[in-house]
Length: 364
Image (tube, rainbow, N blue to C red):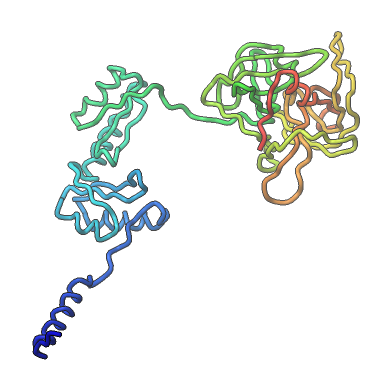
């Protein structure tokens, strides 16, 4: 055993203690900021860093791993960004410069060609991007005319407003107006609007409340009273909903279970909106005159008027708040009377048209 002088041992102990003290940071580093921290935490960090970096701030974004990246035009600010839990990236343009270019394009929007689909700031690329359909020369010329640094992005198609085709809303043919019954699709994921056959007999192009839908695909009247419109507009979505108009929020289709005689049902259409009643009879033959006999209809005491044809018949929704799930029954065919004096209405059961044309009903 080697003995050392006491003062030597004491010096070694002190040196080790000092080394340990210097190896321990004065304060723990900030935890890495990732998407898992949640929108509120990320927004707070972005706001704080944006303010502290000032004119050197170059926007922020999440990388492919979900980590927060903060751009800066000043490499000397990287340590500050790391200390906040973000990853720094040195960029050429500040946030204010990019927003300035975007604002210049905004001010020139009056003369923008239709081929320009839009413009935006691409934060990770540190660029302002102008989207031009098909690389149209007029669109490219507009994008670059202002002298501002932009990247032209070629896109295949222009954006368009989207709208829902909903049961009980208007369905407009050349020469007539009816109502949407239900939405369905086939095995090839082609979508269809189901309505009354005496409506689709009008043929041709069909529109709804938001614009064109498509063209009549199938039609059966008389004997039956159902038809379909093929949805060809990519601006139209076909949710499993029925409009209750002023009577409440939309109901959602959950299936096709049949309401028995005496059961409560409701219907929706563009003329008399939401009306309810009871089932009087099933599988009834109805003579509409002029040789127009229709078989297999359901008889109800819910009123309807012209324009309601084709509209949705559903089971009566349960009372109370929350999502209203209903069973699809059929499409308004015809009737007698009106909604002032009362009357009877017949509907074509929806199951028959689904089976006949190999369709699946859109459900909740």
